Image 1 (tube, one colour):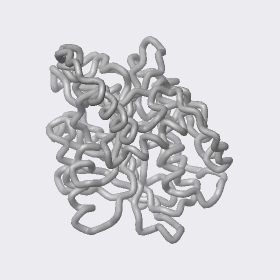
Image 2: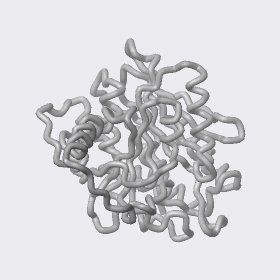
Image 3: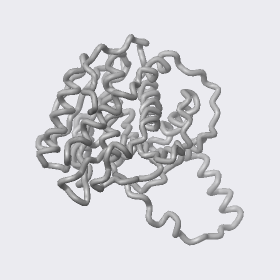
Length: 327
């Protein structure tokens, strides 16, 4: 989970000379993607293949996966519920044709599924991930619906949808463990990828990505200089594919799983809801998840992943097992 910057509204006001202000403005415009306010206009036309792919996102799938995970009383790292959640995710992914699934990281119990690329760039990786462990003021009651069962549900739904299509690059769907105690799961995997020399062209992280109680549709993109071009692409797609969030940039001071990849020089970014809501409390249950917001966040991320991975066909979607029905 990300913590809001406590000093955001308490910083001293600084008056700069005019020349320095102009210099700072010029530098700002060179490093910040245009359009993160949601006002960016693009002349590009929507890609029909990507339109078809994002149209396959299913709200019921997202809701059912979120429900099933938050129904586990606690997913605190090394708890029995945490192991149960890892096994649930492994079984779900193993039921999707075309994915190679493994537990990774030894006792860390990351769950990683790979969709092999079928083009000349198949040796390059596009990765999307979310942490599945939870935490709470009462460790025995840590349902973690907004943080981060709904983020896991988005990644699972992207795996379900993308498995029905072919892409130039290899795509991985990762469920990290131990994020709430130091992001150890993603650190282990990012280090492993670095050691093997496999090029990562994008890592997209979902954490606290579904809380919007006032239907404001504000979405924060968290990125660094190495992923600024991907953030700009996301801003373009927000308009191009009609998700229509009001986008902000780096509103939250965050040490989530995307920083594990950023620290090693990989282009990595994360989407985060405007607020935190009941995260890290026993009250973080599914009734705080904003379903429509979750759907559009999934569609936006999927459009970026598909673009970067390089769609090779419009496909018919995979005929795969659905999430068990909530109830």
